[in-house]
Each structure stands twice: as C-alpha cells, then as structure tokens.
Image 1 (tube, one colour):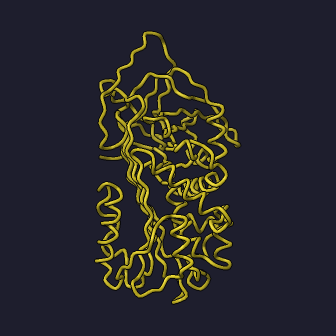
Image 2 (cartoon, rainbow, N blue to C red):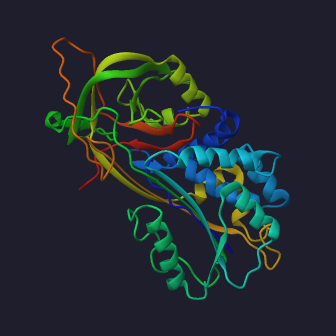
Image 3 (cartoon, rainbow, N blue to C red):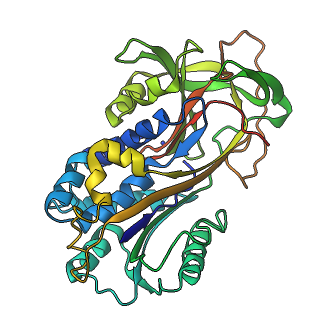
Amino acid sequence: MLYVYIFLLVALSRGGLGSVQDKQTDFGLKVFSQMSQGFVDKNLVLSPYGVTSIMSMAQLGANGSTRKALTTAMGFSLRERGMPRQQRLIQRALVTEDGVEIASGVMVERKMNLEKGYRRALSKSFQTYPHQVDFTNPDQAVGIINAWVSDHTAGAIPEFLASGTLNEETRLVLLNALHFHRLWKVPFDPRLTQERMFHCANGSATPVLMMRLTNYFNYGEFVTTSGVDYDVIEVPYEGDSLSMLLVSPFEPEVPLSVLSADLSSQKIQQWRSEMRNVKRQLAVPRFSLNSEVNLKTALINMGLGDIFNLATADFTHITSDERLCVSKVLQRVKIEVNEQGTKGASATAAVMFSRMAVPEITLDRPFLFLIQHKPTGAVLFTGQFSHPPQQ
C-alpha cells in the first residue's frame, strides 16, 4: 500500500507565476475549508502549500481514472507542458527567502522498483530523489523519517511519527517539510502586552495575553458571498515579501467556517487590491498552536475516495511491481506568534506612541490567519484561532 505522510511547519502575497500558484493555492485552501468544518469551535492550523505539494507528488505517479480524479480535484496537472518548470520557479522563489526552508522527500521500500519516468518527474518538479528504506523494520524506518523531518525543520519537530505508525505493508512515504522563522517588520512592544478577555466561539470568555501595536497597516472591510461582513488587516514580516493576514467577522457569533468557505486565491487578490494603508491600533493574542491531523476524510469529501481504495487506485506510474493505494495523509504544524515574530526569534522592540485617538482593531474573538509569500502568492500557512490553547 502507498503510505503518504506530510509534515509542514509554520506559515503570505503575489507575483508573476500567478495562474499556476493560484490553482495550487485554491486546492490547499479548499482542503483547509473542508478540515475546518470538523473543527467547529476548535483551533486548527494547516499548510495549504504543503498539502498541495504532497498531493502533487502523488499525482505524478497516478494513471488512468486516478490521475483524472486528482487533476480534476486539484484543478491542474503537473504533467502538462511547462508545469515542472513553473513548479521549480515557485520553489526557488520561496527558498531564496531568508528564514524559509522547503524540502521534499521520498522514502521507498528498498526491494520495490520505481518507474524511471516517476523518478525523472520527481527530480524535475521537486528536485528530490528516492531514498531506499527497509520497511520490514518499521521502527527503524520511523527513526529515519523522523531524523529527516528534524533535519529540515531545525529540530522543531524531533518526533513526527510515533512508533507503530508504519508497518511491513508500507511501500512509499512522501514527505514535505516547511520551516519558517521570520521577525515582524515592526515588532510589538512586550511592555504593552496585557491580559484581556478573549470571547471564544462557544460563548465562554477566557483571559489571554494580548499584544498591541499602533502603526500604519493595510486594512479593508469586505463582505462574503453569503452577506457576512468582516475585516482584514495585514501584518508584514521583515523584508515585506511575507506577511500575515488576520481575518475577523464583525459579529462575534458568526462561525469561522463561513469565512474559510469563502477563501480563494482570487479573494486574497481582491483583499490586496482594495485594502488601504491606514493608522490603527492592533490588539492580537500571543499564541502557539500545534495541529496533528489526518486529511483522509477531507480528501474523500473532495472526490478523492478512490485513491484510498486498493481496488480502484491506479498508481502504475510509480511502480508496476504491485498495486498501490494511499493509506493516510498526515500533517503536523507548529506555529507560535509572539511580539518579535515567531518562536525562537529575537529582536529589539520599536516603541511607538500616539497622543491622538487611533481606531482600534481588537481580535478578542475567533479569527482566521494566513501567512503568504507575496512574490508568488503561495499561502504557506492558514489557521483558525477559536480559543486560547490550554497550557
């Protein structure tokens, strides 16, 4: 059986590779929207970029009706002329960013022969080559994969897979690691961080440490297709090529699933074209989230049930040795937002004062957040903050 595992860490905007990255972003955001329906009143963080990368690696090995199902659900095919080069350019634009590391990995059972065409396709699109692993020793294989993940996430995830996750039927593990470490363009002053009440999605209220910053932000007010009013504020990282978008409904009783269902690359482009640079006092919780999810149900709901069925899945472009199907699609994401930027970051705070009244945007109720790479439009992370995590 084909076992697919994803690891993705951390956390957005836009540029010349539009159409390709738009389609990839749309697929990742659809997966997030599907997942969020099962996380009502709960915190969730996902990497749309990572989900799309892993499923693209699987798509390259698909044939027949399985390939058709994947290209239909994903909205693009990496086997189209010019697509491998576009994929390489997108990855190159991301990895040239300071503080961003992206890696793809393929762990294959040592006795299984991979098709040469699949090896070439992985090399062209993802600059990766298969590594042979002895899956008849599952615990050893888990150790090898965990070491790979740890190496490509600066040690942030030392144990991605638990003992017993793999077994002797495992034939292939597809991996994607994304590590992000960036400081805010203008840090929040820790001396202004105060405890305030956060009004949770379930109606309760709980204290949370709220960071505050008065500055000029790109800000806009919008309406979903279903008529729900919400606002968007952009908080840039150093260098301006990456930023976090904070999305919050005006009415506290509106579920975040209404906003996540409206997410798309076109919607983000609309935000960016209509937002205006205005002076605001932003209050946002300091938070740390850790999500471990199996994306199988979400992908089945998106029309990809056949890839999980040994009788219907066709991955003969990967190998003709034996029949393969996908068993699991797992993702683990860690993200920390603090006054300096992300976990492990340090910076001297810039203190900003204002003696005149400035409109305040206080995220003391559930909100969405997205981290986007502006030159490519790639959404590296998106999540929903419904309540402060228990310490």
